[in-house]
Every structure is written in structure tokens, then in C-alpha cells.
Length: 108
Image (cartoon, rainbow, N blue to C red; front, side, top):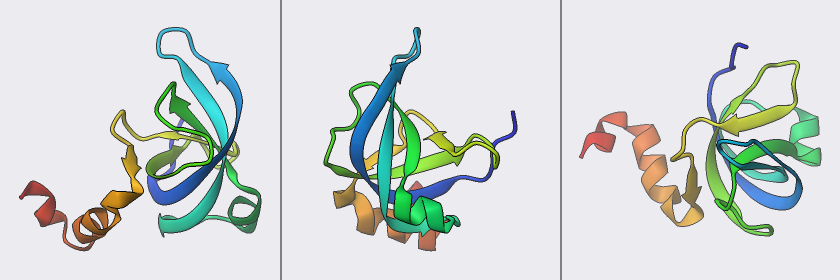
């Protein structure tokens, strides 16, 4: 399975659909994109939301997070975290924006 390039966005967790996984419990949520930071999203994703698989107990319904995602494929309308550290507080927005503007600052 080939992943498409990573995307960064602010997403509001709308509601949980189901739990999956046995070795690493995870939950799939419908998320509303409140602000795209990087990546391209189609109209359906922007208005109807996206499906995102999160590790269990990493997000709360109704909250907003900055998430770094990979899309499983262009054919599948589901996203997954790019790493275990891919869920960030919206309070980190300015810091993340600075890193995106100048990646060398990430090493400081």
C-alpha cells in the first residue's frame, strides 16, 4: 500500500465511529478540517470531514488538535497518523508554523 505525501491540519474531533486494532488499540473518528496547514483537500473533505485513525486515548471528542497525517491511498478516504507524535495541541500552532517556514529551526 503506497501512502500519499503527509498533510498537516487543524482538525476538530466530531465523533468516534469504531475501535480497531489488537496490538495497538486505535479509534476511527470523523474530523472536521478547521484549518488546512499543508496539503490539498477536496471539497468533500473540507465540507464533510475526513476519517482519521488515532491511537486510543489520544484525542477527545469536541476538541481541536494539530494533526500530521498520511492518506492511505487516493482511493481510500481515510487518514492515519504519520507517527506516534502526530497529535499536537493547537497551542503549538505558532511554533509549528515557524518550523514549517524555516525547518532548520526545528533543530534548535
